[in-house]
Image (cartoon, rainbow, N blue to C red; front, side):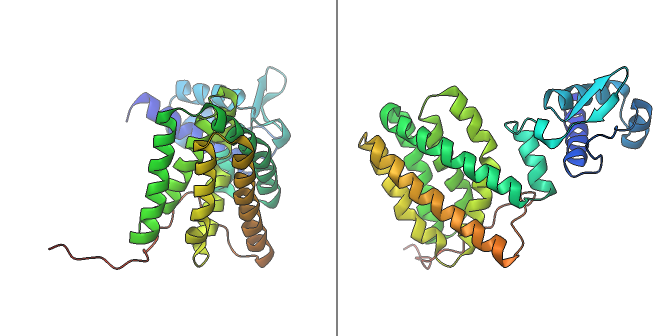
Length: 255
């Protein structure tokens, strides 16, 4: 295992423990020597992990405070690692609400810009993602993967670096939304025309149509999540691979 992998594993472990509440806000994480012994890594690895956690806003270090965990409001929620750790710890109502509201602010604006700025290559990549979604519905496969590629492609097509960075924080919500929709009977099939409407509006260079179409998708996803929360059903685990569709069409034998 390389030093980089050791660092990444240690960072994931400590970050996940903090977000999961193993070290509550206001408390201190164990000293270097203790962590070295518990995790079986060097002081250098622990120090690098602590630096990363400070950069992500999870902890603060100092001669008088030691290494103390900060309140969750101070964490960097635009950091993909922080979002991933929260997703693995559990998708709370508050976490999902915040992400849904962020998505409703960011994605419509991004899609409007995509309708104005998308290049031929951008369109080709989104078309490929759409084709993957359609194929998964008809023949079985990883629908969620292609759905994510579709939405990520739209946000990349806006060619705004800050929006693209925000899109990384939306990844947990997007996957959760897609998995919930996928679990509903004919959920993917019923949403496919809605995705096509968004893509067609972007191709037609119609920002207003694109924004209206993406809002239909977003609000539908929000309703799906609210129904699951109200029913107390367990939300999908982002630590496991996404569920695969079985497909609607029988396999046609080749001649």
